[in-house]
Length: 187
Image (cartoon, rainbow, N blue to C red):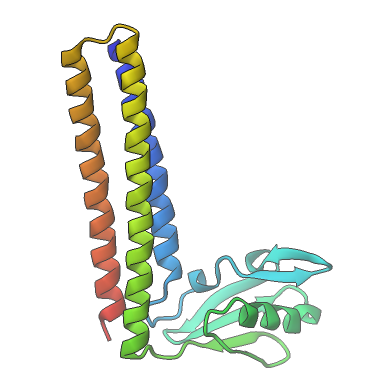
């Protein structure tokens, strides 16, 4: 039975780690006033009738702390890329100089910073819900093992272990959120 319990713990940790990784990815997309190529991650461009990720069509770099440079592999798609960035609703306005796109990242207002913090908190809450759902699944698996002959003591210990793992991941989520809040609110 301990082998099955260890499998449940490993599966639970793996699911929670995926949730944590997803949260990190989502928090990177929330800009903190500094230009970053990650801000354009997820931008899709209409290219020959198909939606294509920007990273497959152009090189994205930062020129300085306030400017992102998008250098397409084909100059013919500059306007398509500009349209895609504008349509992504990121609050960015790309400038076409015929060779590349220059995107000036405007400084954040206090109100916009608060909105970004709210968005970060919502992402963190979604991650916590994911961890809780994984906990429910793990506890259901333990209850199934009880039907197969797991002792009550082992069941209680397993439930406590699942709760410890849950608390660990909730703490990691809170730490990530706290770091991102400081990053956003720092002028």
